Image (tube, rainbow, N blue to C red):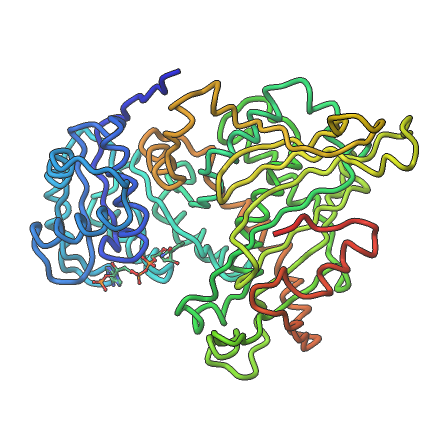
Length: 481
Ligand code: NAP
């Protein structure tokens, strides 16, 4: 089966922060891959913008190095030259007047105009204002904004209002790159495209859900910034809650942006307030070969969490009684992101108690090795009676799909193409972001009021012991990471 690549319309894409880490690691290599695949049309133009003094040639060298470092393994020199031909650079200060006239003159009439704000959120307002003031952004132009979208409800509201002063909601694309992952979309296809799962998709058949985003790395030189944020703001409020929404939401009437986002919003609004004993915070300790969190954060008394585990409840008809366990942390045993939908046991075992307890689990793995498996109970092959074992049924269908299954675009490249297509389904709406902060704010505030101290955990472990207990005391256990 050959994958279908439909080219998007011609576009002018301006990347503010075009010399930054995100542009070099994700945006530019992603655009190159879309160019190679034939999805980015030859009429497209990409303009990097930042304050650094640089000409087009120097910027193309920077882009080339970024693609060589972070782009595809096999590289066609001719295609790279053709791609770089579409790249230019403009020196622009988001907060000053330099460069805006030149940008205005560089924009063409006709192609879709998109502006990627790959800069600190403190610059979003200045960029939005100048794009409008200089009539560079038109009524159908799009802006793409990165996380963090605020650090609490109040700041998110201010940010939303700042952008809304210049752009309408259907022009604003708030990125959560987890939503751009192939498997996350496949989760929706599996759930809503098959009759098999939906009748079972409720608290009557589902025992619990586990959402894990485990990182092996530490705070990677961002310690001082991370110390002002923590796992709750950095990961739970956005990525983990978005995944929870996709699992818990009601079937939208259609797969269109507002129908999907309306359903996700309802889930966030149905989340119960979390009592303190349903949350475990942790901080990784120093190990023989590396510093601990507090050294990395340069704050000997830091109370910021590098790990958090939460038991959440979605209080609605479908999910009453089914807990959603979420955990995320740094410096853990392995890098692993997955959602596991763990079904209840059959009501009666005809095989007797010696057959053991077995449960079906639908596991949506986001990284590494994106894919979906279904844990099934089967008979252990061979003689010796009826012994049951659990084996994963691979639902990624790589054999059936052939090379198409290998050519999966990275989340960023897919999302940028969606921006050009004008499809907001996989982007967060302003009210969703605010609702997510409304749920997380009291949790963070509670820690502060109680002077909560995170539990230490060993680097390379699966997190603090208390997090294991969160499930153990309910006769459940986390999947291994
Ligand atoms: P970065 O490496 O610090 O890059 C910042 C970029 O902004 C540089 O190109 C910088 O170039 C430019 N810039 C700074 N001040 C400017 C101004 N006044 N006018 C115009 N350009 C200005 O940051 P980053 O890691 O790429 O992150 C960019 C955004 O993405 C941030 O909001 C971050 O939170 C978010 N994000 C990043 C990642 C990631 O993996 N890096 C992941 C998720 C979200 P000059 O200094 O030359 O102007």
